[in-house]
Amino acid sequence: MKKKYAGYINLNTLNGVLYPSSIQNIIMKNYIENSLKGIFYLSPTEILQAKFPITLNTLISKETKVSGIVMLSTFFLPNNFVQRKSIYKKLLSTNKKMYFILDELEIKKQNDIKKVEDFIIFNSEHFVKTKKQLNHFENNFMRKYKKISLV
Image 1 (tube, rainbow, N blue to C red):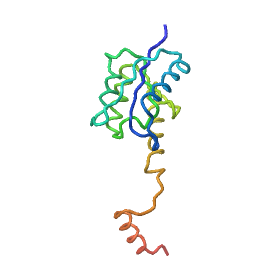
Image 2: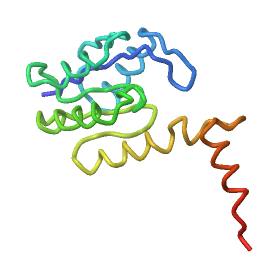
Image 3: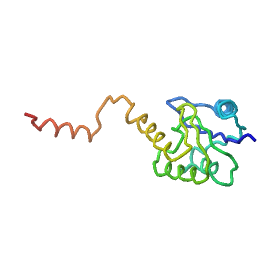
């Protein structure tokens, strides 16, 4: 019997691109049917104004009868590490899996979480954004650093 997988739609931008829900549905349906050889289940959309990922938590819950959740990218996970950690814990406790299509990553076991977190950290804006101007803290640091003689 084929396993069911739920798509998860998030309407935040991804690298400056807004993927409409219809496009996300097509990409996820194709991935589930062709790569996972599963059955495509509903794709609910996360509520953009919500402080917490309500829809994602619902998909991970025991009550939602799916084998896993598929989303476009790890960057559709919450920005807050504590919230992500809670999601990972629930995911593993319900024996569900999570797949990130564009990042070519998945969470099937505890060790996979580190790979996802490393990917998020080293592809975050902090590491990839071109810095054009120093902020107040950085300017103060540089002023103090220039006063220190290295000779």
